[in-house]
Image (tube, rainbow, N blue to C red; front, top):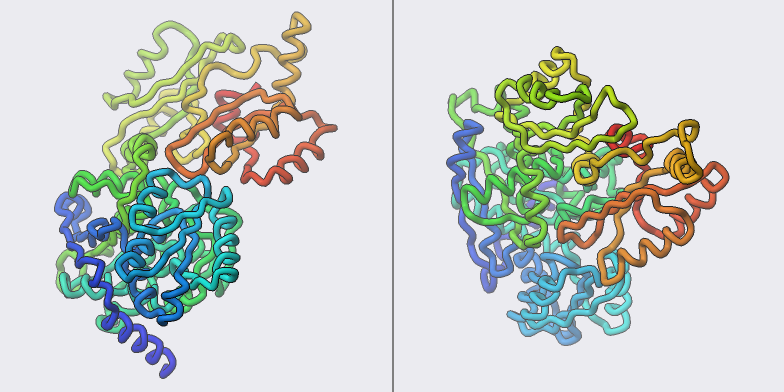
Length: 537
């Protein structure tokens, strides 16, 4: 118990003495009145988008640099980052007159590179991924005697981030539940250790993106472990392994961890914009998405039974460095995250008037999307891909499916099918072949039918850099016939491809060896129901 208290007091002292306000500002705590009314709670947003670099990362970076020795300052500092840590460190170094070097992957958008250079740091573009940039930065640090500045797993960085909690309690001393985004855990660790020291009864909840949940994995394993892969949408929290120091603090001082998906994050980006006119980055909206999910899952438990009043809940808007091109994705997905849209595959009769009859069966609901292509392979039934607007009531989604089923429609729910939402909705245009090998009436038809019958479908992620897509096609297309291809990029550092290949039984071993050698993250989607419904042969 004494060690537990000593650790907490040590961090409390560091946080209270952190000189972050030499460069950082005290950010607002904004009440979200519309969301408060909708969720029947008192909800506040801690506005770290107001920092000079539009992110909380400046706090930890400056606190670390302020602790360096004179000799360390002379040799300079270095870090690997493609995001907010890079900008925070660059500005902190400029303020203190320290030479900073930032190693960034070549996939980093120009706007981020330019911002770092604008703060006076040297940028070295190396590698196609963060891991390659990180390895290079370690080599430079050793060879050039530079001090490596870790983005989260460092005591001084953690203490700097903890100053967010100090401001929060000053602004809202009656805060009862605080939601904090989690990437490597620096912000959550710093805030949790401060909040629990001064107000033990406060509830601190970490929020992770479900496709980058390194803290959940560590909690289950009892120690930090590596994720096989991480998501690319909320890139600010796309961390494969939670920090050692941060995990030690989080398991002591954090009450709970919840995860949210990309659609829920998009819905919270919209909520923040509608209330503040600020466009949060995906990682920045993460904690509000967790708050919203927590309230919806605990509708009968979130009111304070002792005071018979709404609870004071706070979410941290951790950053607003949004890539503009990502807004298209956010716009497409936000209503799904709000449970205001259902994505369905519905089988209707292939005859005149059937679409009109289907619309009538929706009970006045608005159709947001409708995709259909006559295939000729089945003249009695047609498969449609349809989006339908909902009110947001949790029970309405299932009620819609039940009503369509009762009207004798065959329905597949693709609302949570990522392949359907990311690729298939843009490709509905008929199946790969109208003929089976037995039905083919010419050599051309027979060849086409055979190719589709041997089709294997895969989704890929590959780093975005000049010539990346061409290189992807060269390395795969020259070995196997590509039967299907769809490419989507929303301004992220990684592109997303759906590709079909003609692979017969004898070729399978060589094919998978080749995929492994390429080094791309991939997943086979051949049995995905949305592919089978709309695109398979």
